[in-house]
Image (cartoon, rainbow, N blue to C red; front, top):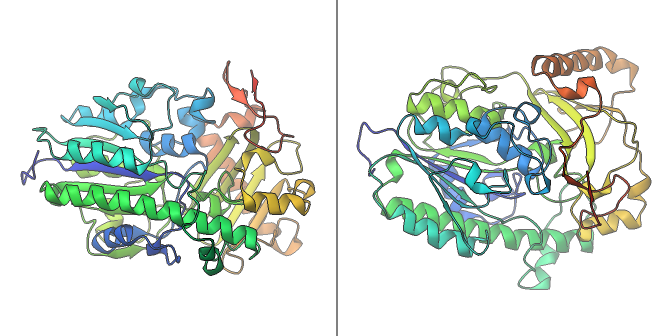
Length: 437
């Protein structure tokens, strides 16, 4: 449907792997000019967070509008976890309004993509940009005669990273702020930057094709990633480094003008936003908030807090958190007191920390951070008597959320589904031999 003025908008869902906010519009020295251009034309959400910092969980939360323990995706799809009900995926709701849907590239919420519910699933050799882009361009050149929901998923910036085109590039990058500035971490970040450049080229090619097809004006572009970057202390953690995501929306409904929003928003807010934008009733299972009142200037905030969880990544590591503008509270729900190292992807930065005793460093049961004075979440205040009132308040806020969403962790350990493949908590690497339950 090529831009009919009263037609429901097309929806282009562009998503990457493990990018966090490490792109140019968020001030990082990672040249991504096409993503920057998109931000300058749309709305950049500077305080956007995923609801589960794992590959399958985060995507499932966005696409169902539910928290991971509500939709069932508490682990990784390729290791045997799944949604409780694939009819809760957004494509089924949009189909009632006449939308056609297609999947190209990465999806990560089912071993068998055909069960999700897309009208068409394109099989391609890999999910890298070189294979995803040509199919996407051909699809955008068609006239479907009705609005579309198109999921375009890039493997970039997942490890294994591309090697830097020159080793000297490692001299001029800065690793994440929770890691030491060392040759190993710089080389790791230089490799990430190469992958981010490939991602940006793919995003640019797709957006150029959208323009060339005359579809840009009546298409909502949702550009995001699943969770934080694949470095120690980031991906698969409940720190902001693991939960923070790029989120840029461009299109009808007020998502224009090169604006930036500092309001707290969650991935689960995307589904209700789309419902309100296209004019369809919200399904009863949605747990998020529409962003339309925010971008239209009717309110300054749509939520006081964001909530997030991790139950499984490759190994069991149950944690929950609540984050307000000022405070972050994280609670661990098992007896383990040292890192679950298999839940951190392998790489030079991880090897550096392991050589210096990371495996023995304690992980507290409770963590409380003052994000105003400690945005890097380095000084745990949970044991400070001066902050006991805040700790009690945040504990209570998290428990209310868990009870209101019927979080199964309240009843004890959450078992994996039969047949799931898991790493043991004492293993060092996700590549170590798995056990099948």
